[in-house]
Amino acid sequence: MERLINSKKGMQTSFIVVVVLVLGLSSLAYIFGDQSWKFSKISHGFRVGERQVQLFNTYAEGEEFLFYADESAKISVRKAEEELALNGGNGYVYSPPANSNRFSSPCRSYEGFPLWKNADKECFPSKDTALKGFESTITKELNEYYSAYGIKGLHVGYDYKIEGGDLIGIADSPVLFKKNVNDPQAGNMIVKDAYSYSVTPSFRQKVGYSLDDYNVLSEFARSIVDKCSGSQDFGSCAESFNGMDAGGLSIDIGCGRKQNGNIVKICARNSMFEYRFALSEAEIEGRSEVYESIKRFAGEYNVPLDIALKVAMHESGGTLEHYAPDGTVKLGDGGCSKGIMQINTCAHPKCGDPAAYKFGSSDICAGAESCNGKSVEDMDCNIEAAMRQLVNGYAEGLYSPRGSCICGKYSGWNYALRYYNGCACDNTYVEDVNAIDVSRIQAS
Image (cartoon, rainbow, N blue to C red; front, side, top):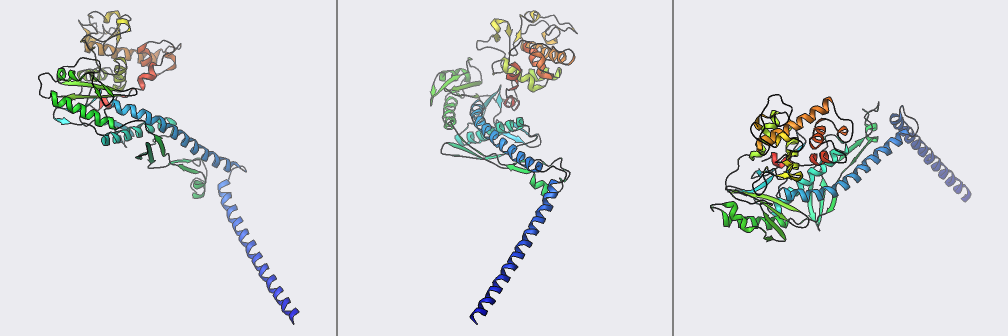
């Protein structure tokens, strides 16, 4: 009896094993068939292993961008620190339709110097407002690097916080990399998922910048206003603050030029940065006369305004001024180059003496109507001559570009820039001019 019972138990166990084995094999067969069908959808028209290689390449592209984004963040934080100081603690506003950033100066700007006081309107920065400007400037810098990477139309926004001396930037959207755009099965979700890879370019970077400087400078600027407001000569009164120390920042009233009248430019420097801002007793509604002249002649000669402004900023040393601190015309090249756009009178001798206007003349001064009876020491004559030089360069680049040396490397307005400075070798003039940010001038 005991042997019979054991025999029945053995039969039952064997039956269960067989059933489990059959079910397991059936499941494996189903899974294999299903995955084979999916793989056939993914691999249709491709050699064995080709899909896997493409998928790996997609991942590699995404990871390569993450490395690029991290390095860009390091550089962008450093550049934003410097740019924010030059912008007086102000930042940028992003315009989605134009996919571009516009400099924001609440009290306007004067010749590239953000106004902290414009008559009765005051826009003194604080640590909190400077932080917002810092954040928007970093975002602008980052997206310029992303654009240079070749991802068309990409704009990544960030949420920021400072933690333990680090700036943490949390990207608000991922960047999608996909390799299925030319796939005949691109409409199939399986294929789409197989070839897409998204990365989020968030970052964490050390900040070597004290935003408390803006509180210190605001208090200093207010002390100038408190003492000098209502005085007969606001600028001369402000001169009494020249050379002072404000929280470790050396104060230069006028930034190297004597101040008088209603507008005061101020530069504050330490070993790393230069902070720029201006104070005005009288309301500044528009831009400076230099800007208006550049805009007028750029329009007359069809020179892009940003190109004209960048040349002026580069040639004038970044202050957009025609005159030196002592009231004379700015000089360069040992006295040969004159004015805001540094017209070289040694290379263009007719520009050094009062020109006799001659309609149709190819000479940059004799052919400039505003130069009739004047030299390039006159601001309008100087600027019109500069526009003619840029146009001449642009025309040469179109019709008979030089193939030798540096000029032959460029085309379009870049050729005109190279021509403007002369087609000498081993010079980064074009790159230096293009790198100048004129958005804060145009936002005035």
